[in-house]
Length: 79
Image 1: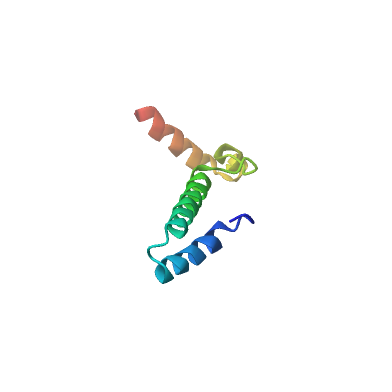
Image 2: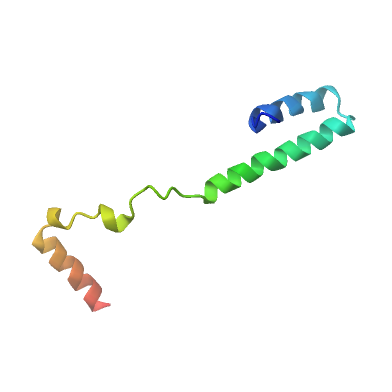
């Protein structure tokens, strides 16, 4: 765990838990490592990259035909 390789450490702790199911120290370290792995996964899931362009920057208005722009504007004005 000290090297930051938590997923690898977690599989090692799982092996230790199977070999020594009553070892309190191993169970404690497994639980701590499991929490870290889950926290990292959660943080990765809720994070976003600021370097990505926004959807507004990705729209190429010049590539749209006038007819499709007109149809799009009529659909929104009816609402």
